[in-house]
Image (cartoon, rainbow, N blue to C red; front, side, top):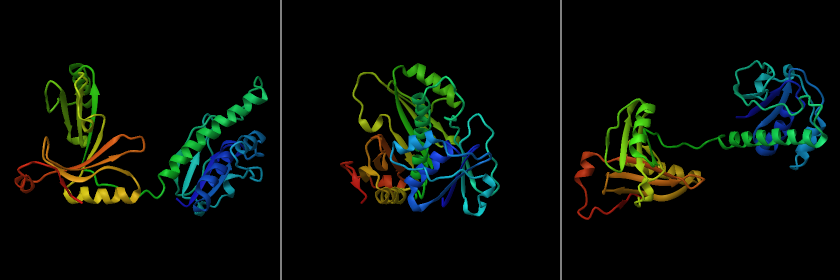
Length: 282
């Protein structure tokens, strides 16, 4: 993303705040503009709301959408909620973020209440731009061939019935403590684990898994994760007890466990060590 354009009808409130926020977040890395189909003056309450967080948009001006050169825009974001959004001609990626117009007429509101509406719109737009920025220039990740998820449930039988209905398949198998679903169409391995008061190993609870093709892919995923700055909970290793796997454990930004794994080949299984202790891969 090199050229970003925000659009709303009057280019006076939402798109102006979005322009100021994006300039602050992206800096010189992205050319940021805003425009509207019926441009008007920048709303003073938009200026005030932005000033509260240290961003000055008082020098910004409202512009008609047809004044923007399509050649300099590769991403267009429309912010209209109840109105008809402006049309922008060009081959840009298009996103729609429906944000309620804080400048919509509301005669019964006092000055403080009107400013509060601008603050709400400002904060909603800011959070969305932060996600957009986080997804820019994303480093390469693992080439998944299957996804695994485990959740804990109170009533194993009722949950098995619900998820059989939801996924449209019967479980592959079950015990008194878990039910396993295999969904080839979704590339999903999904496990229900009963919450029965007994201690379960933390690796088997509430985690998300990504299956890769082989041991080398797990090692490469580790290198990608390290370069990207993600938290490595356990470096790559081969484990033998339970389901033999080449595995790597990461933690997401909230501390949730992520397992990246590959199943062992027949030749690898034949080399199982007598003590079955994990073998480090790096």
